[in-house]
Image (tube, rainbow, N blue to C red; front, side, top):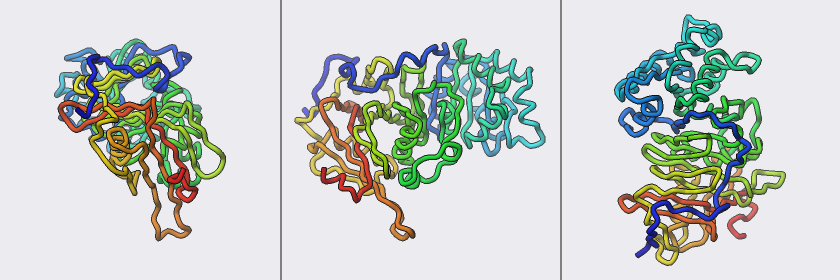
Length: 402
């Protein structure tokens, strides 16, 4: 048997093995976040049903906020129609920079609109451009508009805030704004006001959020952003997938795929071109649970007895990717590492060789140690991977030879 089957359905890693969130992030709102990595399909029923249930169940009032969308009328109507299919009483809040013929600042401070939101059970933020969303909902001095304040009051009393893509990005206090390509961020670093800007902060100040994460290979751009702002925890959510967050620290993955948890609490970096040592990556698959405060991991039911056994690997031979920023490449490397016969895996991120001046290349080295663990599903080719070490530096500095 290639797995070391466990009898305990609620398997946990040892205390301290995975990242923890400081209790100082309190007080927590009584509500719940549903953070969606983008491209949520109308037929991904478990996500839509969860949003409606958290908002109060059948007939729940849910305010649709299309302010990030390029076409807010069309986007708002489509989201409201989908929520109604799943039993909600959804309505569109007409506050958007791109909503023609309206004064979005006046509408954002409209007392009647704010009252409708305050009385609802949930809010749903559309995808699009997150900068448009913050522009519409924050006053020029950075204070909350009446509509945004109503969203916060809904959340604080126990309502649900859901957001997809851009609506996910605004969940953290700092968000990507108009970032340059990943290799440029690694080469030159991130800049506040251009690559990064202030988000709406629903998840608090200690967790950085990114979306479309595995499909677009965005794990590498999260690293310099987190270092720049001093974040210790990052949560990157893949497409057609949501992370349900209770009390800002209890995570559950629902939907099609999963999310990557990035832990820099023990990581180090030195001045110069991008480099990092002892970052930690964990992949939480659909159905998994994780508590950011206690460090407890709870596997999905189909993985509860499937902890991987290094003595019985499924993969043999070197694990390597020549494009670690490609669709799902980082997760595939993590899987081959944890269910393989090698102790390390290597991935390269390289620029266009025709560019002038030449673009840099970076080496990402994954390794497993005593704190690492993996779980495999009994019913599908799916893994959960916990606490893999990541070291990265410019490729010409010999990361592969250390």
